[in-house]
Amino acid sequence: MNSTLTTQARSSLSAVVLSSGSGFITPKYLELGQGFGTSMPSDETTWAPISPRILCTVSQATNSTTNDTYRVVGSYAPTSLVNLNNLGLFTTSGSAPLGTVASQINPGDTSVVVEGYYNFPNTYPFDIQIGSEVMTVTSGNGINTWKVTRNTNGSSPTTCGIPVNTQIVGGLNTTNGVMFLKADFSTITLDAGSSIQFVIDLQFI
Amino acid sequence: MQFLPVKINIDAVITRADGTKETLGAISLFKKVNADENELNTNNPSQK
Image 1: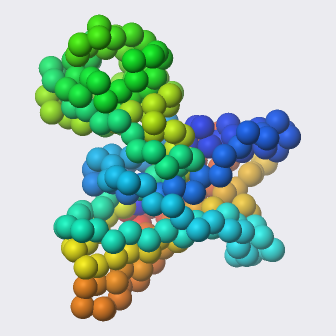
Image 2: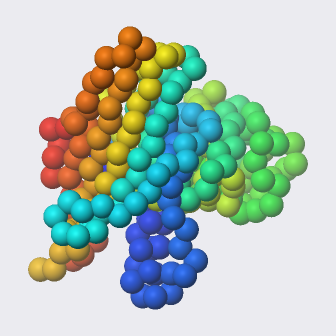
């Protein structure tokens, strides 16, 4: 299992310490995902997200010293079988727009043909994430194709072709909002009638 | 060397349809933010 504070979270927390973080939004929406990968600070989305996000109970908690921990507690009860592999903690309740790759994306390509074009904003720029690579969409043709800047937000470029039907998830400047924390883990299979409660502690030590 | 450590711990409890409970302490982990190197270091890779 890996988990990480995202680049956006690190920036927000340092701004709070600097007393310039008055716009800080509490990350209290849990999103679960059914996709595989290794969590990276550059990630802006979960993999194969499940909608809707879960409004969690948040509080200060004590692990070592008084109130040293930000605690998030959220529960999920699927209506059909799911295989959970990752989660993200977000500042907004809205889910990310989703699409799929409609024409293979090769290394160095700066055009993305997308199925689900109209699920995404028509104002630019905004970010998308495909696998672990974040791309910034700088313009669109109004039909099905974006111009993109590859491997943004510190992400690594995908070194092989990204095949047709690979999921595209909206990132910054979409309804995705800001992901604060991400974790991946071994598959947890849940069927209808079961439920799971997550307790996420972010402890300053 | 200066450290600004952050510990992220995630636990989960599953309640199955038949009422049985499973505690997933195994998905807890430990990471540090190293202020000097500006990177996260996994301290518990065995949980992967």
